[in-house]
Length: 280
Image (cartoon, rainbow, N blue to C red):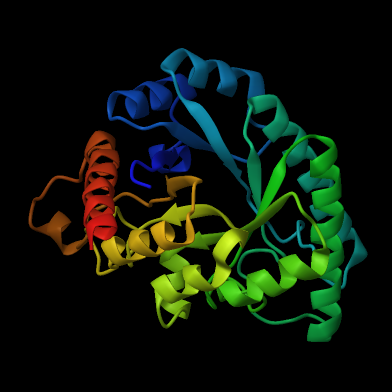
């Protein structure tokens, strides 16, 4: 397969009007956009209209797991808060026309267990299962994300994500691969996605420094070649924190890249990597 569909997480555009983000992505050749999962702040109907007007799809909904949204915390209220949030995400995704939303088992930044680790694992499995069952009733899938050790202690490698997903018994979804987190945790990005096989259902692309592909040291041609080997057919979504690859450049009087330049760099480099990976 050649010709992956590309999406862009609009969080990288700093909260600008969604129609402006959609128009930019369409102009740069994107197929879809990934939107921020805060149902109380954003109108899914407005998002869908902006995407439709620009000729884009909504690839996915990216969540925000704050301390009060933690599926594995010993505090029942935090676990309940996470469930309420995930049910609202499922409804939000369905109304916006997104096929999936991303889920993680802990609040971001909790790098130590607050109870016995095995007990927290079981709470997480139960929580993901409940969220997935609700999402299935809304016609939406989940994508279970693994963060690096500086974001969570629980799921760091894709093989751990696959284990948790299998324990949920769910069929509506799978595991997500994020090259930024994988760069920290996986011995080989390519072997990690090969090991997931058919469980891989979403991909986040960013370079080793969380910038656009080509501004760090991730081998995207090899990674995309691995996706090709397992027959991955989902979106490749960029989750970037735009800025200069070397912040010292600010002191040297260099201009920061524009939003167009960041998004353009991402898709150009990835398409070139795609051609190189498929032909190798």
